[in-house]
Image (cartoon, rainbow, N blue to C red):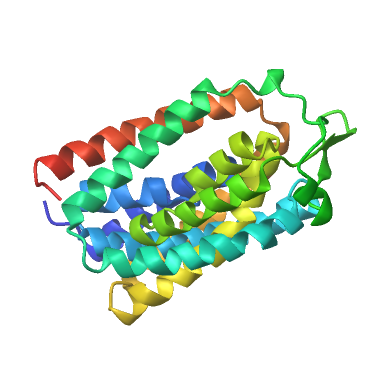
Length: 282
């Protein structure tokens, strides 16, 4: 069934609103919804979908990061430090994506999302002592911080395993350039699991970082002609609106329910992407 340009743009807009909301709440950047929407829903070429998703990731980061910083949840020093790793990896990943078959990209995309969903569900935040002595390097770089809780109190935390987190961030950057997902999935996991940073701080700091990481790889896609302004425009507007509402919801959100939402959505999309990649429908 052929859709008019107006109907197509409207569907993309509402899909992007949902993507922005989920991306803002989980730190994923919205690309995990946008790419399946374009490839599975409208048959858009994988690389054009990734190009639009990278622009989307930049928009999500811009829409939510300022609100989170104002509320005092984001750790800017951690974000700036880890962006060195993700930006380097993003350029490498974008170059690899230009030569890798889109079927393999779809399968890798799905596997990364399934891994993220499983790890998120298995995480037991309540058993973690965030005030335990942290990494000496974290102290040297002044990465430790605090964030406001629901009752208005300040909860302090110490950063652990800085080198391990930095290494995972490099991999996250590679996947960002390769898959166009803003690398939020691995960024949150690296900060939440490896560096033992509270989940809300991880997601908000990831949002802060996503824009820079996506911009680094988006340059490569733009040079190769894989970013279509007509495709990206309604998505960017929708994502900004969704990200705005997401930034208002997160401070009052139950973390366990947030993890469950995060996991169910991306697990479903991951299975769809892998199936269509293996059957050659992309």
